[in-house]
Image 1 (cartoon, rainbow, N blue to C red):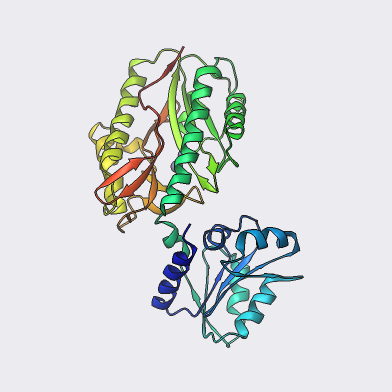
Image 2: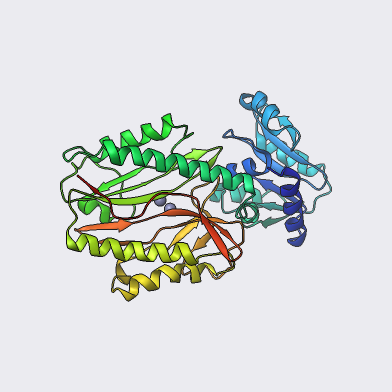
Length: 360
Ligand code: ZN
Ligand code: ZN
């Protein structure tokens, strides 16, 4: 990872925003800037140095992970008190902070800190940097995608028997992910059967999987901190004509989006590529969510492939492409892949077939 370049890009942005010092409190942002993998820290980007603050629990880990990227200070009591002390002893007029991450109470404390500084909400500065991946980050996501598809393959071959509950299959899937090396589950694994598959963010329930059900898997793996996020929908038993038809609507939209979504498109244009296909087949009102989201140290990050995003998708982004069609009370289909966007081209990182699979 190119730490010096990350710092340089951040400092350029701070200069543009007229921010003298930035308090970074969002842990994935701290990890991005220092490689720290622990769960409690603050990072101060001061005019002439970067200071990493954490407590005694992380002393050894911080020395190992952060040294060389920031000055490490282990603080006995309150990290924020130490942060104010350091800001006060630096030539700083404007302090930026991550208002989108802090609680309302924390923001109040910030803004009541006194007339000594001007406080400026930094917006998603570090998140914007993170949207453009370095080759090593893309490689980590590719590995996470690989772990996920191999685990799914095992489950589809051996774990699906009518009468088993969704949570039994989810437990098997999570085990396969872990034994293959996934560091953790980046979000709650979804195994949704029959009518449950019509709920785009269904949990995993005690429902017994039946013959003729759609069975939807939405899950991910984590490798070197980076997430994958994959969805496949299969049919248990033999698919009905209606299941085949709806599956084909989604598959066609997903395929066309995977072929055409590249860097430089606006987020809303990318969304439209898939949405227009589904609308043309008469299912527009059954595709209620956006087409996809950025993927990296977090499972939902910048950029968004949605009607609301009028910004260009940057070269180097990794995004999901995940159209779906959901029919309440009956069932739903979603197909999701992770795609690396470049100028004029892309690479699908999650290499797994999208043809309809019938589990017999
Ligand atoms: Zn997903
Ligand atoms: Zn997703």
